[in-house]
Length: 151
Ligand SMILES: [Zn+2]
Image (tube, rainbow, N blue to C red):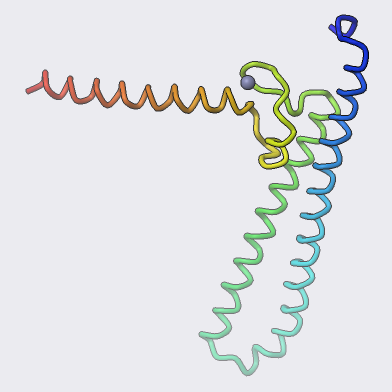
């Protein structure tokens, strides 16, 4: 495949790789910082809440627990995103990241910036949505006609 590429194409691929890597790295750093910040927040609140619990009544301390649960859920969500980013970075290294699952074309960088985990290009995603919509309409029509025949 490579020998058929026009001169200059390889460096274009390399600059796309660099841009996508930078984008994913930045996102990873952002989320890591957020998670670290939240962890510190939860921990310091816990230490402070320890003494505070003696004067808090049952209702207030259970509210504090719920708050902790929400924070924990947020951290969990962030670490899942972090996993996806690590996954995307690994795929980028293998040259599997950023290509459309359906047509194999490169997914536009703009689209990947907005949706880093997109697996299809805009065209294929739209075609898919249209096809799904048509399928739903057909199913609805089939549903109503079989209902009609049943009567
Ligand atoms: Zn496509």
